[in-house]
Length: 417
Image (cartoon, rainbow, N blue to C red):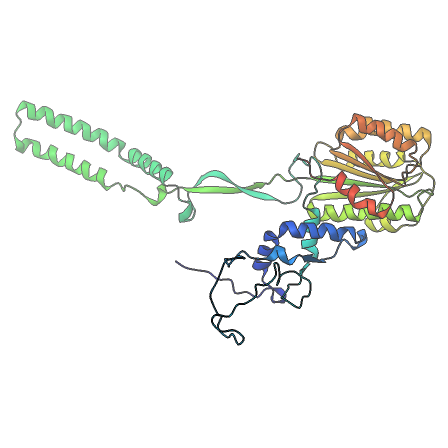
């Protein structure tokens, strides 16, 4: 049996195979270490690797050895202190183990392992997803899959369809010999009638020769010809893939001071990183609003200094307009995430509820709302509480400080069973 050995060098002389085996074997310990590391870093530092520590006891391998107790009469080779018959004091229970220094035994340091950026993000995002993501249409990207498409006269030997080829050969032999077989049956019937009449062999010689010629012609037709060969045919057809769009709406009004904007930016940075990593075919639409809403690019969304009053419904109206023009609900999975401090004109909060009820939530897969500095819930939060009771695809959470961002994000986008 042939064996193929991959001797290509791994980057930085590391064994990729052994590394993946290690990650798989100690997945539980690494996941816990990643969770502990997340508590100690800021959101802006999420896009990097991490050094994690795994306790030495978790790395121990099982092996056979003598347990405590019992009597053993043995002197180990290389011994300079004892001879046969000497009594050796038994070491205290647990000596020689542990990670602390000791003058009576040896210990092991905890194992420090460095995760790359991609590995760290994989463990962080592994239990998160866009809720209820469904396939609604063939994506516009050129994604195809190979499907059976009948048979072809040309192909490679592995694709040869034996049964179909034999069927074609049988049909060809029937077609080419049908007239000759009919004539042969007539001549054989005539020969039989003449034999019954007592005709001499000399008179039957010519008839017999004609029968032999017909049989030879029938036998000359090949059993299988290259024209009979049929091969399995496959064609490329568009492959159904998920197609989704996420609307990011952020309040940049005057009541949103720099601290609140910073919290909102961190949440959306985390969301954007999550989407970019897990859903390659997900579009992201950024909408900033104060009294007027505007669709912007990523740079302006996070770093523009524009500010003003607060009319939240302007962002919802712009979102509806973009949905109708570029992302019809029949073709796209629609998601939205909104960040605000909840400060809004009282009459406009009711308008926001109406827009969500009638023109947004019936067509969305999921809508997540985070309110920053929620110590005293304002009109928008109260209006959205009514929405949350009516629509199961609407979720809302509050963020008061940077430490709340991770728990809120994971709660909004945790994987549903």
